[in-house]
Image 1 (cartoon, rainbow, N blue to C red):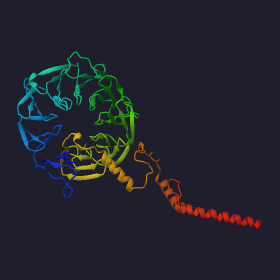
Image 2: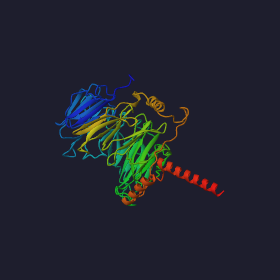
Image 3: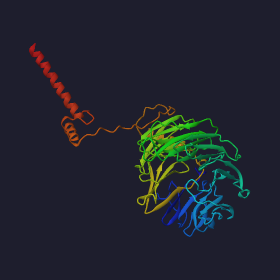
Image 4: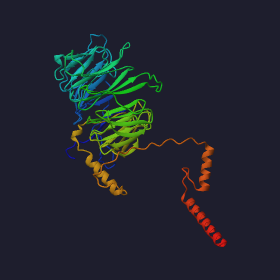
Length: 513
């Protein structure tokens, strides 16, 4: 695999950031080797394509690094900066400062190659839904921002042209550009004074009078989460209500809606269990998506692009889904306030590859080549037991390292197309399992695999301590286990008694004769 790039991991602790070489670790002690001297900083972030990354220093300086050489290529001194963001291809750095007057343009867009100011504007404050102010598509072919009652578009190569087009949507509160191609934009309008809220899809670069290509209205909606598929043909929308009128959940109510950009499909995703939608993720092919939902134990279902169930993965203490970049393997996990159970599924052959546990995980992410799964417990979410764990794609733990204080861990992004397929590796592992274990009686390798679904054991009825003690005494005296089955000794003694009884009956019969 000489043509494939090497994996790298960025790690930031109390002393700053360092970049490790990724697995497989070639050192004699099986530990990663640092590729640079540690740099003191308060935050870091890679560009989406992995070409550059930024580091915010304690003095307010923001440095841009080349990811290949790990050398600093540009630094920006921005006074009183409170937020910073690097664009997907690393072309721009966006910064936010608190403004003293509306005339002061406090959002700045800097060109990372030249250091020039490309664009600036005023924004009163920022939230998770309004930052970054200017949003780019993954390939930076499109750029837009949310303004009062409209979405404004720019020429991403030349911001001096100003606003090139706009889509007017009265009351718009949030929006999301589609992925490559950046052909559409989804907008959310909250419900107001009895009027329902709505999600609408518009084509990008069109005039204000253009009509939405798809629309979905609903009541009891306070916020939404958008999830576009790869290929920009479908949109999943998790609709959140602060209050559950059925009083079944303290955390409110969630519904999952699905819309296609051509308007051929819009409606609720058919979930077979009541309860919240914990997580929903598109595969990297964009042709199927997985949902974990329902009151615990949660259900996991994989759907196709027409919302038809493809595969059921059973129930368990799960709230997290992670597709590997090749779209073949799905990790189903329970992180946060759950125990950390993980199961790894080969979705193509519909088999469970393995399982493991990663307690207290805050971060979970597949490596770009799809072979390793990283979890980490980080501050400030967790102040103790900070550390990194790396697992193989089948769930076996590969690496573990603990930290006094760990703030950030992430893989250096790479395009999945630059790596070999994992299918050959899966085949070789499967053949080793079949050769090393007992014959499974499965016939030829071409035989169609059967969907493997974990069975969920029903909880046993409560037994008081004295009843358990009595059952134990009965098992000891009679040789019967709690399930009602007889032990080998008990069966042997029973057979002896039956034989003796039969012999006695035969003897009495002959005497009578």
